[in-house]
Image (tube, rainbow, N blue to C red):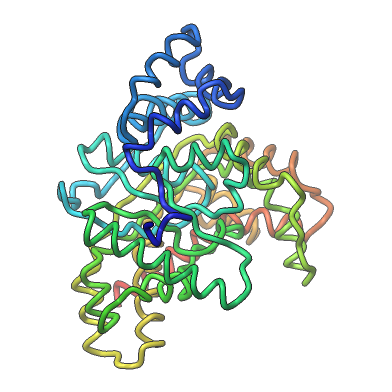
Length: 379
């Protein structure tokens, strides 16, 4: 039995049985009625029964579903940097993380449109507790990251996850997507957690630097003009601001997942950064301490993600509102500002200064972070 049995996506030989398992599930019917609104159920059911691989399932069902989501809840997806990627080369995409499902779904849709292989993608097991969601996740080539384990079990689980990532990249020639941190960024400060890098490094046979150079690490920046879950993030942000422990409600992850998919996003941009092999090699020449190496690699990834982040009018508006000035007024119109103000006044208690500041910072922090990074690069 594979050591990855508990976390892996389906093999293509398992796809037929998995599809039959969920074919009559009401949630699949809802998804397909959304994706194919003008056809009878028999159409997509017959098409699905003729799917015999994960790639078939992704191209025939997930890709059209993503296109429908973009059509219904956005003003379009733009991309940059994909020309840097080579066909048949596996990459470890490390991305900022704003939306539970869409971040990786949009990246895969873009990879497909550019004639590149789609990824196997990390997803927290807290999001796939329900049998239907677990089956759907495995059908879309996700592997699960186990959350909330005791220390010893967490260590063993991390070793298995690390080995799976290595196996995907170096043996199966399959690209991998993983977020730069556990959980989505709530406050607009996209930051790579060293723990993610340490987990990835567990499968290294020798020096970490040499191993990371083999992985073809590529930073990915995803930018939503409007975060469809911005208001939903407020309770956690306010708890943090008040030094309180935040406890999720029972169905919070699922509600956030649906809101992220169907909530208004306006424009979206994905930027592919440079392959970091050479830059990581330079870190190895200047840093011998392993902890400092991890920090330097995390800083390198952050620098690339922040520099590639597409700043929208909403970011500049929030910055000017937060600081009470008009530093960036040339980057937005009065209409765009009025729309943004209506949005946050509708979802936030404007009489609570902490709530207002937390909401605005969510959009304003990327402006400050990118400015800082670009100044560092130019030195």
